[in-house]
Amino acid sequence: MGTHTGGMVRNDVSHQHSSVPASASSARISKTWPPETELVMSPKNKVNISLQKPAIRVLLQDAIERVQASLLFEDAFPDANVALRVIRDCVIAAAERYMPCISDIHEQLKSNDEYLSRMASVVHIIFSIK
Image 1 (cartoon, one colour):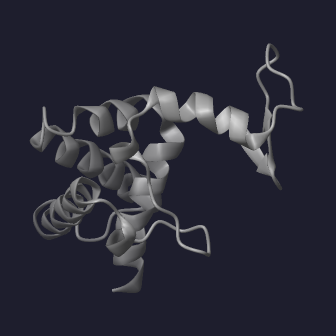
Image 2 (image 1 turned 135 degrees about the vertical axis):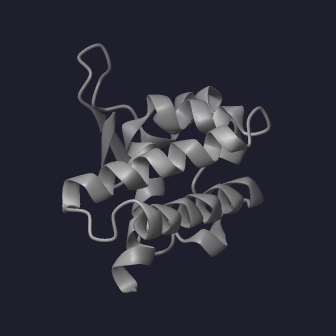
């Protein structure tokens, strides 16, 4: 996992050099996951539902509905740790609902914690506003 520093990506993995340009590093990453799995970021570096590809929009809307149901029928006032776990579980469950059509998104959610966290942040923000 790299950290963004201007136009460069610094990888903390010892076998890669920190002087690798972001474009070269991004090329390796984009070959790993198909374009339909990419999250579109707003100018403020946030994930916004309306900017996403259709499959991701449907997944996020499903996750929001699942969290709403959890709040209604299981625990209306979960503590912060429980709420985060419920949101993450709902995002993954929503992805599982649309398998195998979104298997790449599901696989990335299961294997990339940052990707899951960004998706979960959209659902979390929706409920923070209400």
